[in-house]
Image (cartoon, rainbow, N blue to C red; front, side, top):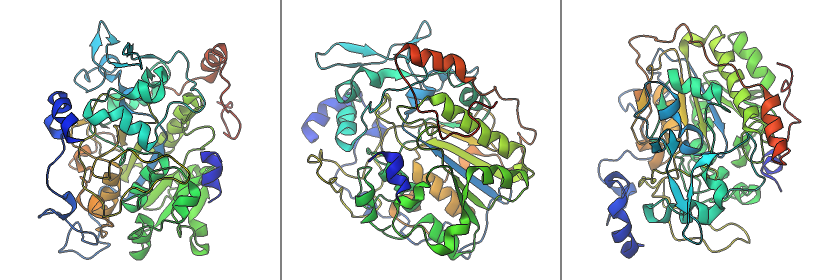
Length: 461
């Protein structure tokens, strides 16, 4: 069963050697269970204990929008920002020599495979790999030198502003997170569940049947919003991903599940709820392989423009990120993380034994862009964050009780904003979305035929 159909149906010795080349902040913490360490907030605690739950903070922001795309690492999409975006030479992307990346990973024979442009905006079907075992092989105890062994040379491909002009123009103006990690070294479903629930409840695979057997350990962010009468909607085209959490959809919530055209209409009419979760088309515009990533680029552009033209723009914050690295290379080793709970990783049905590991380490870096009139121009965040930081932002905005140790103690992403002045009250001029014809010709020259149906408006503008 494909991801689209599934959603719709819904060691120390080696480390002593390795960590000589790993930043101190990414090394393991010894002898301590982070989830029980003194001084940490606990599940069900409030961001502002002296205020009642549901009490709003950050009055400049009234509408929070989250868009999560699929399967790309920071280096894979933004690694060339230092060379392509003026003023961002210090961004921690690829190491460059004469404008070209020198980052590499060895293949099975020990030969270096250097990061290289993809050659077309299309991806290969089923490659690269981002399973629990493949991700841990890529990580290799912090060396980050196993991507090619896990996925083949395809893992070292990347895209830049040639294929992603709109995303690069967002990065030129708006804040980006260069220490934003996915929540677990695992696939899509576990990482999405971290945003929805603060934990994957042990899930490490994208398997709808297994996910359906794992209720949210302490509810979902949607439950928290409902409990305190904070309005929200999920907008989708072919499937709504919160349905991977059992109990999410109820008849009472049906009016809150709307289509993408409704998102554009609600934005234009000033009818967006307090929180909006926007789903791409998981078959064509989510940027998962084997898709043409320019379709996803165009979808991001439409969402951004809809918000910038809306009467509610002055009070909006949009976060755009990707669920996990998709098996693509990133050079920054994931740091340790606070365990969300005491639930251990659960092997997938019929799958191989899991590589040893737990939920006390983040997954690989993924891109994060914050778009808002209150965003800090050209800001690059060095704060370690993950998908539960998005959850923490929502919890802080409406003083909602945390679900797990992870979201309770996640950084709430307030560093991306300057609430003393709206630098982007008048939105900046952004690059046009890419025209598809040239990219599709490149795809077909490589023998690639990306899925194009099911994306209304794809060829209309």
